[in-house]
Length: 149
Image 1 (cartoon, rainbow, N blue to C red):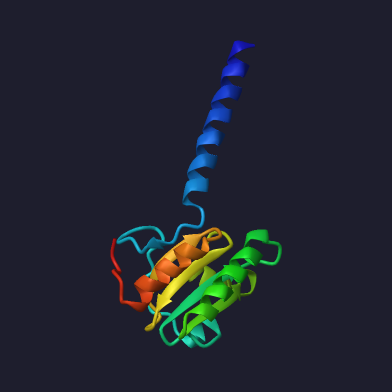
Image 2: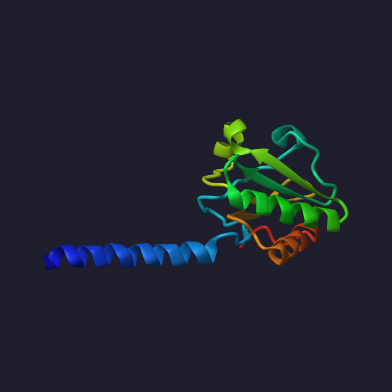
């Protein structure tokens, strides 16, 4: 009887820690890491994403049909793109572009990439980013911010 209670407590503790860690990282626009799992060292073009990229930067969003946070992300990215001249917001249905999903290592939606003027990925977020964070990430992309870190 005691072993079952200890096992249940251990599972509950592990789930709580996982939830807190995920909540802390969710929606954070991180700089590309060298050698990390999410590193994609390539330039995305109009043909890759199926839409025109922004002159200064592009907010690239991967969404899915039944994703509630995707709707909030669409609204935030759309507002930011309207605020900053030369910035485009491109939304891609992840289910219809599995080739790109695999290439960019998108594992859940929403996933947001901030591309610089050349189409290089300078920031990435899994989950719904906050508007101030998107604006700050755009500053790094537009100003030619660091591509390491």
